[in-house]
Amino acid sequence: MLISNDFEVAQPVAKVWEFFGDIPRVAACLPGAQLTENLGDDRYGGTVAVRMGPVRLQFAGTAEITERDDAGKRIVVHAAGADERGRGQASMVVTAALTPVGSGTQVAVTQDLQLAGAAAQYGRGMISDVTAVLMRDFSANMASQIAAAERGETVQAAAAPAGGLAIGLRAALMALRRVFRRFFVPYQATS
Image (cartoon, one colour):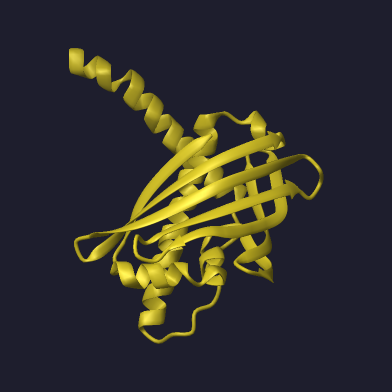
């Protein structure tokens, strides 16, 4: 399943790219993610916990930076893991590309996600909505960490766990907005 998200960060490309070079800081910005070890050669072990509806999944696995294009400001990460209770597996290839927009940076993130087991039971819409919510939280956490570093503050891991209720409600609101636009907006336009 291919999922794309874009967001803007009110910092120049050079600062955002520097931030992407610090993988522990990047991981700390993603709700529910935690690095557990640096395996060397741009490989990391860690966990990702997320709740989708009544199912709470905690994946343990590895992530490896397979491409890093400093000139083009593009990074590719391959990640794979299995649910710690044996209820499924996930693998993904994440590509992030940075481009300047005004005085800030546009970050385009593409995720090629493969799920098996309990997480695979959810439809593409729900998974896309949850991913969009996580990317919004990630971008806010990242902007906060970059700004704090600019002020010379010691930056702690700012990311909260990916809580099921908050993410579920926000994803449900996104789905309701889509339904509203699909069914009611065309009706109003033809009236």
